[in-house]
Length: 273
Image (tube, rainbow, N blue to C red; front, side, top):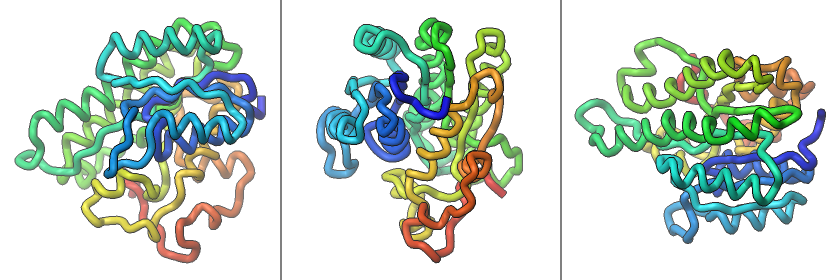
């Protein structure tokens, strides 16, 4: 299947950034998109809400269901999954995109930040996968995609932000384990991560380490995710993919148009040597 027409995607954190870009790309195929995110009112510090995202998705050719969801709350996730199934008849794809970031060391990480990262990144992804599982089992080509990195145990990826690293690697461990567990059901579980820093609202959390002109646009992750999610589920699972690798397998050779400022030096993303 080379397209997502008629398929239903449940995307967490899809009100902006990479999640919204993935949603827009799927919408161009005519997909149904469940926008499961917390932003239901405008925030001057963070652009986009579930409703502005829905408008963009429908303008791109898809159908949207905006739902206010805190992935830390089991009842909210279960209710959102039920509403998605009632509206679209099922769920074919889950994209665990919602993520919290706090790049600080031990003394600079309040426990509420530690808890937030682990509850959103690890527990939230696990919970959403569990909630969607009965419906994924009924899909003809079911996929779960974690937006998390390949696990790199170099100390340099721990020493400055151990708590964040633990939370993102927790997502990756979930992807690895669930791929094996769900193989018998024919459900693909993969992880996708950008080769370079992506220009999103999360840039502000990097403390000036990255500027937009040294980044790529979220569309590179959207196109890479599209390729992954259109592959036969039984033939592509348990993989830790970088966006460039996925797109090369899709036949893409020129990545220059994904740069915010073509010709500028691109910064590698976290966790990549």
